Amino acid sequence: MMLNAFELKDKVAMVTGCNTGLGQGMALGLAQAGCDIVGVNMSEPTETRQAVEALGRRFLTVKADLSSTGVIPPVIEQAVAAFGRIDILVNNAGIIRREDALSFTEQDWDDVMNVNIKTVFFLSQAVAHQFIKQGNGGKIINIASMLSFQGGIRVPSYTASKSAVMGVTRLLANEWAKHNINVNAIAPGYMATNNTQQLRDDEDRSKAILDRIPAGRWGVPEDMMGPVVFLASAASDYVNGYTLAVDGGWLAR
Ligand code: NAP
Image (cartoon, rainbow, N blue to C red):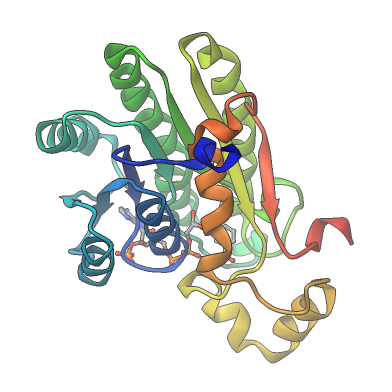
């Protein structure tokens, strides 16, 4: 019976940036738990769509460049027009720019902040309005980072944005708990995706990182499935404003 609390049958989950990497892993985990998926992407996420549909769940593609907030109203409209409601939002889409702080450009600052925090806030706001209209709450899961807890190196706007994600997750939980909306975050550790390709290509950095991970391996998108289903489901109804590290023990070190 306890496992019924994790059941997500016929819930509608919106996942941004689900064509690859962690977003793809989370979309598939949510679909395995019973969700229909609204994938918000810049391009058609063919592989994810096929995998979700193979699980017998519906998949809606909404095309949007999340570097500006103007796309948000049509994103919500398309999701609601197709599936009637939204129950879960996973703010996964994110970018990173690597450069010494002494040479870091304003462009690299703004580009990262726009996708990683500005749109995360305003998409959450729009989805919260939809949750309130629907009348029975909802779940928002933001994707933070180890750099919500630590400083990092050569990624100033990424660190600023992901530290902000953890702070805003707490703020939104405080304000929206009264509407039965849970806002939590997952802070992935070092995961093998496009985001970390440069790090994994750098032998010295790659070894230094691996040496510090108690699990002894880089994370993979499948590692996100259990945590996202937990935070999307009734099993976590009394968990709010928290950032859950999924890091193979990195922060414990
Ligand atoms: P990824 O493979 O680079 O995936 C990033 C996703 O975001 C892609 O689907 C990408 O779409 C999408 N995206 C980027 N800019 C977008 C925009 N303007 N509009 C719409 N979609 C956009 O990296 P990932 O590792 O899976 O990253 C997923 C999330 O986890 C990010 O928030 C990242 O910061 C976070 N994270 C990753 C790690 C890690 O070790 N990998 C650690 C901590 C946190 P395209 O493929 O079309 O560009």
